[in-house]
Image 1: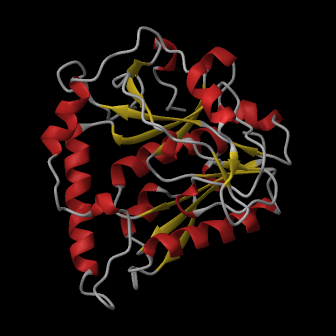
Image 2: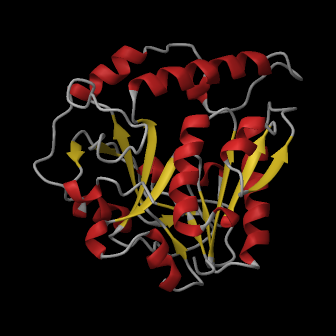
Length: 293
């Protein structure tokens, strides 16, 4: 494999299944030596699954400010890696940035030639599991066994950084005044890609939050969805089945509104409006296997 000009940066804690898929996909495209994984708690399973990747361990202590520390660390590492790579792709372990196969390229072949000195934003789509229609296992890949998506502009992130640019907390905003969003670039968020995986992950997140209530002042400042209060997994997934299905996979109206509402936020960050879209979309067959390398 030729030398890659792109580094992949993520963080992980107690997410073995998605880490395996992450390493298989990004490592297969760019080589494991170009993956940089912040290991929260330095778990042995992370070192085993991500053998050959660059592991940056951080201690599992003082996590009442976890989200702030998480993104501060990512920003600093991203800035360091930019000195050595043309592009740095910053994402969570359940986020898969994919190039539309219709382009004739994959993420690696596109980034090998993509210009620098910019920030690339990917269209955010969230895979949802329609349990009655999609019984197949996702063990060897998610796209294909799962084809239904919802537009999730919370995950339309400025995730490929090729110039000096701070990322806001969560990676949702960047310190860059241009919305550079190629039509062929997608970020698939996999939180809802499988009911059983969701339940297992939520159980572990809830347990983590309970542990952190015993740390410091007892206040846990993290993603509100990690808390057990009000959780109803079956209703969450049953609601997907009730959503209308769009007649074709066409997001031109979504992209148009994103560009129309593009404006400064605060602290030098830029953003677009993020309305909810009721329809689900069916991914074209060409995306099957696009999250494998």
